[in-house]
Amino acid sequence: MVRKYERMSGRQSWNEEDMAKAVAAVVSGKMGYKLASRTYHIPRSTLQRRASKIRYQQPDEPKPLMGHYRRVFTDSQEKDLVGYIKSMEKYFMGVSRRDIRELAFQYAEDNHLNHPFDVNSRMAGEDWVRNFLKRNPELLDRSDHENILEPVNFDQFYHFMCQLS
Image 1 (cartoon, rainbow, N blue to C red):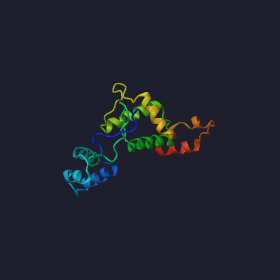
Image 2 (cartoon, rainbow, N blue to C red):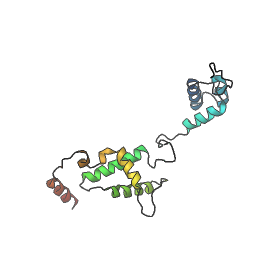
Image 3 (spheres, rainbow, N blue to C red):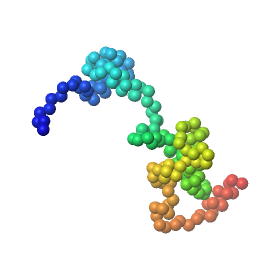
Image 4 (cartoon, rainbow, N blue to C red):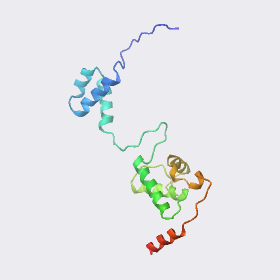
């Protein structure tokens, strides 16, 4: 058993604070890569990689996930989908899981997003809609959360239908 370990290599001898300062200096344009790497004692290639991640990162880019799964929609796009589904429910149009799957496929196609959805059936998968509803529990049927059923407001429905015609 080794009781006293002494590091022999000089790899990653810099700390994160110096890296953050160097990246900030490069991104703001105060220093170049070479000067910042010498000043803060950081490898130039590591500094270039970290600075390019910050410089060219999209602000609304989906967060990367571990494994081979990837997100289809960004957070704001999912909020748009949720808002549309809620507005459909507000106007007494019940939305089924199948409707959500079709809506997600159509939204991905309209926005030219790269998606793993089935092109033949023109719907998102069962797994996708299950995870979407887990991420957005407010879309689940109220009867799933509460065991009481609310009476239907026929006056409000009739008023809405009169406005449409």
